[in-house]
Image (tube, rainbow, N blue to C red; front, side, top):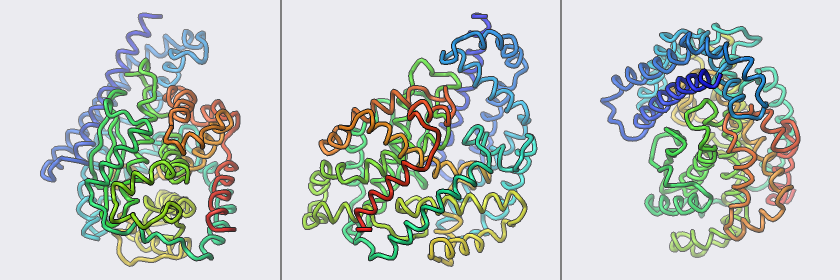
Length: 501
């Protein structure tokens, strides 16, 4: 059995390495690749994805898994080998339902669509991507049809984001959240908005970059095992546990854009850097779900990065970096500015209260598209109507509308967006559990000390990688099932104080 397990691990490492190679190609396309390389890059990524899929679905892998099943069941549940066999079987059974040539063709299409999107968004021209999105919707539906499902989005959610979570469960969770969130948003937005003019001055990009790097180093991002670059739409990617990279973007007239994007992506990266090195090359060497992953970026970006204690430490340094812009701006003014609540068009720069409404709009629209209730040609108008009704904002263009997010232009329609709100919910649940174990964390934050929080996250979340599913991991880390209660307590306390509710 040990020999068979060794052979299985060797095959799984080959799959892992090919997937990392595909990530490297994607990273290059999103950062430094000249536009002339788009066609070849699509072909190359499709080939690598196809090879990875073929290696994973090799009948020899199936035979090894079958022969090792009873052996795996005899191992302690918490052992790495038992988890590798469980996750590998799940991945194999799922992957064998989808033909390799289909996965290659879909990957090639996504690469082509992304390149068109990078031109369509600045041109404010939805018509450029419309035929590509028609094909993306077709691919998304065909992918789902390889599986049995209660709702057509279920296989996409399970495969790409949240194993085991179904559309019905997410809809119910979102309904509960909306019932509590919308009245709070209404209370806050009826008050006079907090002044954020201090963030809208001229902040040279290089100085923003340098300050952001200093911050994430102090939070715990390891530049010996990572790097940062610029891109159209910030993301984190991993080529191994020793090479976890982040990207960001800047606006010289908006200090928050680059700063919080940098902290956000570093949160993702610290999760991957915290996975035990013994899991390298196995199916466990990655985050367990998009929701858990997003919980880490949102925890560091919002719960820590937008807290008063965080800026009690960092604001004097920020003033030193931008003396002309911030010398007459006190800490309280700055703190209120970075926590301004105002409905807006852009999800990635949305405030903490309205952010989830952006996610729910996207989730509802993609379900409507998958169900055949919304045609691609009608998507821009449906988008504008939802923003007008849900957030009270309107823009006739598509650059800051349906073209703003990369997701439908670099992947399937369906399966990803709900992870952002699940991440917000989980971020508060994890942070509350960390505070219960270490009440000194807020005092340490005021001193610029983050090792205790980082260590708790590493021990309870990071180190396990994909060993446990999102729901099981949450139960283990917090002693409670997934719940919106800590998140709503956090929002009501923070914004109740800021807006004197």
